[in-house]
Length: 381
Image 1: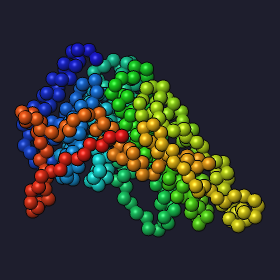
Image 2: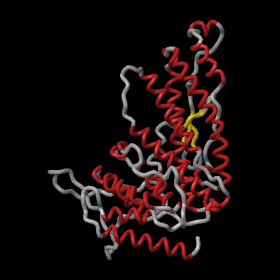
Image 3: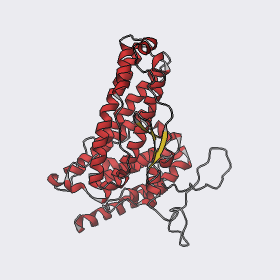
Image 4: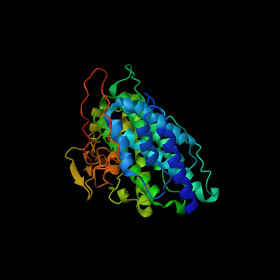
């Protein structure tokens, strides 16, 4: 980035901070939080400001009341920007907010800003299109992810197996959107894109873990399924087979691109063809007893699994048929929270002797006595 662009970006950030500092604190606005968000989504293209990113996460963890001013500040910031740097940092920040351990973020629904047609107005369009495409793809995933988590619609008329299958289809949709977040131009190999790709890989592994373990649960109960459920299960398995092939290509692309988190991703194995044929027999009305009489194995899910841990602690479950990630994914618990916090060496909330960093203000439930806010432990992996 040219020096004048850096200077102009820094000036914009300072002006934004000044304007937010003049705002009156209300239920919808928190000037200190807005300052942290502006710094976390600055125009600096050299990387993420992890110190202020973690301040934002701590506010989110502190109380669900924080969510309203948080969403206001992020939506205002994203709604005004025409810089791919600010837009991408905002999406990464939003991604981390979704992964905070608080139930309040599950009720966000659609994102309060729209980057589906994002364009950077400050650079040569022939040189910037790869960055714009990356931002749009990242936004499409996060928007849909938020919808999937928000969807609390219950369908009591449907059985648990059908509900599980519908959840799997939603996760498969998210996996498709995740794999669209990728570099499409040579000039996008910059620090900020690599950091974003690290976040994407973590989310992708978690999503794939949910899909694989969901399929395992479905196959355990497949002989109690009716034809409609079996047909949908077959569709899910066929989709999973295709996605497994696409994942292998995606991981290889990321490794070639230099994404750190992609270096230790395990190989993705295909779902055996006999499992798919077994579902087809169920759809065609062949019972378990008839299948066994014809010499077909009805043991779709293999027992006696063993665990495999990669160098970075990424756990997988290996069977002699196909491979799944550990459902709880405990090593990477916290997702982007862990990603951001492993980048810093000191507690970002520690107050210096000069008080140059504002402490968090604990938000208490109405009528409850004030108490000291316990700072969250840093997570690393």
